[in-house]
Image 1 (cartoon, rainbow, N blue to C red):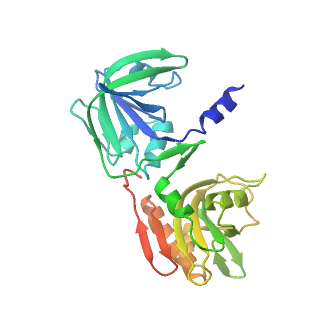
Image 2 (cartoon, rainbow, N blue to C red):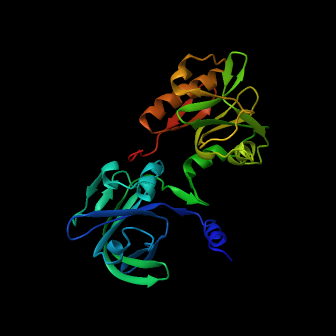
Image 3 (cartoon, one colour):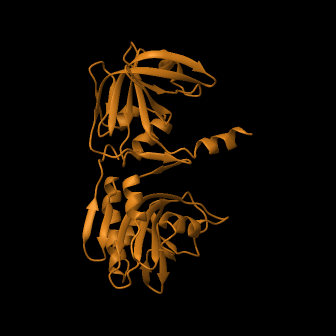
Length: 306
């Protein structure tokens, strides 16, 4: 047994994503991203989180008098990333407000719990921090998911993977790298890369298998567009994805965002998706289109600070 294999096994457990915040007697604020959150008791109302000794703020949480648990909503991945890796003033990067005790509540969180510290129990390389909930709130927004080192979004996953009576599944990708989008090219015509597969296989799995290569890697993010073709009765699922680099020459060429409005795309559905991508990318918040090739709805989830 190694630490890496144990961590991988732990990662099989699907969890939510939280940001834990506290403030010390001098008014300095601390926060970190955690999926080690659980309810402990209803009477009295107790919850627990587990700060690790590797945190620069570990001593602040291990000895804190109060803390706030913010359950992040779908679409708040950027907030999670800020509290997981940003080295500067994390609270300047997000929208938040104070509870009655000065604790930081993240705007748009699916739920939050303001807690008085009930116990702080050393446990290996972590501490089990148990809090007694005295105030809380929740909104009508699904929580952000985490599994095997990746975010997931149940609302969009259900839409992308919903069973239907189509005969085939077409899965495409809007793959981003350094301000450019990967597009397949034939002569002077461009299109989004896409792949075909069986409907019994999840669209995300079809895409992952086609993007995987020894010379490249990509991170598949949220679903971007899900629709049914009236003519072919095929299911179409398009995902957002990013890559740090690698060889994608077999799939297409990189086109800078600034050039995307001017290139020739004969597939109107692809043109519409690229145009929407440019708009939503510019504001940093993506929605999910669900419908058919000509009409449907774009679902925007609680934005938070994304």
